[in-house]
Amino acid sequence: MFRAGNYVSWSEDYADGFAGRDWGDGIIVETKENERRAIYKVFRNKHKDFYWFIEEQLKLKGETNE
Image (cartoon, rainbow, N blue to C red):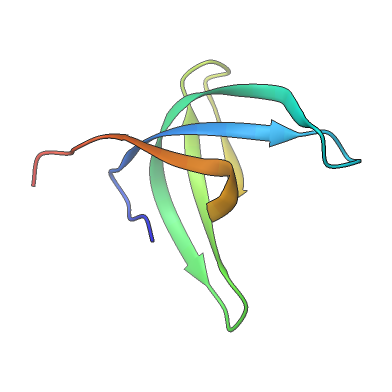
């Protein structure tokens, strides 16, 4: 489980499930959870925007200062 402030690598898959549509780095700014899964709002450095990802699309890049 990730949390706000984590620096992550993100990846987007094509609609048919193949990996590699887009990828980059970003920072998690918000987390929402329901009974099925958590979703994470990430500021994407590459696009300078915010995008929602599921956990399987994210990988922790480094440690944050806490």
